[in-house]
Length: 118
Image 1 (spheres, one colour):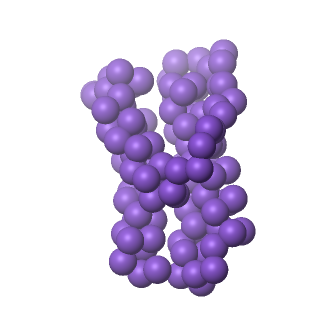
Image 2 (cartoon, one colour):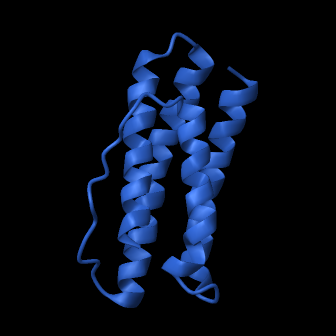
Image 3 (cartoon, rainbow, N blue to C red):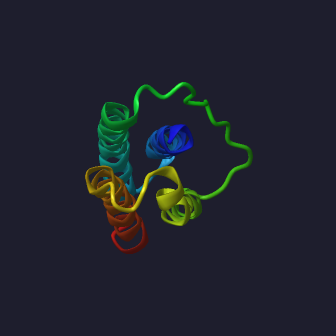
């Protein structure tokens, strides 16, 4: 679970950086929405998980190398989440899985806005 939370925090940091660099108003707004919402998503997931399983011992700080486009990075992160969600938390633990769904929705909604509204 710690890696998922770390990944959401990294997504937030990268989106905020791109938000400050973009010349597109639509991209600026979409990334602002993402970095505001994804932190709330991460917090909700972490709190529910810890309420069920106890405190997480290690939430790593992920680094980022390279200059990957934000759309590519967010796509990679959402793929990782989809590929690993049932390793992190049992499929039957629906309250936590629903919170993960909400985080995935935040990614997908942002990707839509970045692809088609920018």
